[in-house]
Length: 107
Length: 119
Image (cartoon, rainbow over all chains, first blue to last red; front, side, top):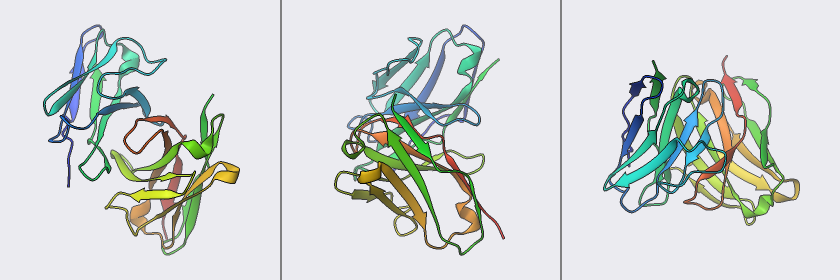
């Protein structure tokens, strides 16, 4: 089955830039989406269609795509950004798939 | 404001049946897909399937095909996820989420329904 590969964890100090990657063979052909999930809360969409930011999401969140890897970048990380981040895309049959998630720790 | 409100937490026994719900408001419910996502304790998000309430077109993840049933009643703006015979391994948080299309973002999520299956 199709897999999206994320690092289990990323750690950054406040004010630094966090980059979370997601790799998958179909990513050159399929859009990627990113969701933020804080403990005890439902996920929230932070990036859609690789690079677009929903209204209400701070400008420090951005997305990029290169070949089989998409990247969520959080510039000027704040303590409130500490959360789990999941990428999501679709496989060749149109079934959605989530990555295993990346725990972002703000030191 | 778009809202998806899910039914409350459930505690059930193995072998029992269960149906949980997700009610949409402040948008045209029939025009958006509703997907379901499982999150087992301490684990990541898993895609279960999706339904278009307008015509009940339903797509299941292969991992969940035959294990659950997704349905919707557009007359009352509500989607459902049901099991006919629960197992302990079905213990999880279940989220519903709205999407404009099969390959679009999940732009609004319910608060989640915790299902606990224990004897």
